[in-house]
Length: 290
Image (tube, rainbow, N blue to C red):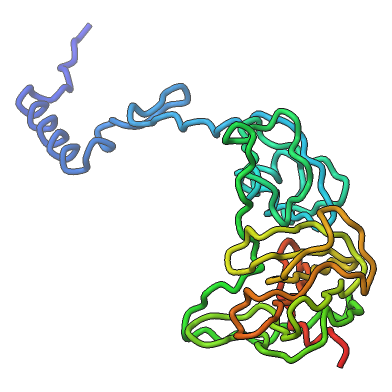
């Protein structure tokens, strides 16, 4: 048997080839040399497990009242609206109905009755200051400052949910709805009348707030009406109704006061229509009789 010579290249050629391959791998980086390629059961050493989302523990249930909004509930109980939506399966719009039980997180804190969350505090929810409820935060019914260049059109009522109103008090229009200069906006109208004159409910509804905790509003009564309407009566001299009272159109709810800063007795009157979860200010003169 004749042995055949080996076809293996000489050692110097092998070393030369390995040197060239090493230089090529260094130029291409670690991946070209086989580093960092994860197989089916291999994980990159740089991968870090993502932290799991925070778990929210369900707590007590709050019962929705007429005029409540999901944002009002969130504001009162110091809970993000999205958390309430997720806990209760409310859907992307966060729609709620009167009498519905809304589950709160176990860590919820009741900061005090909000004009848009007026129900009693659920049993088991923490109330700070040894049970003394602090003043509620201001709702979006004040006159927030706006940028000087901002110009907003007059908001008219939606014809699909119209409301029939009467004047809360007859008198001169001292301040109109809309921009009032210096970057401020009046979300209602100011009506001048005699001090102590009767102020009446503009429509039948339920009183959901009576108090003087709202900055710049003085003594205020807030009423919710059918058709998702709200009316607010600010700078009253006195209030003759209390939270939870059902009132009829024309029923006295208070008297004209002296705190509006108009240089004479007056009240501040607002009309708001719910658009989704937002109480949108509507020019009262567009819904009051001429």
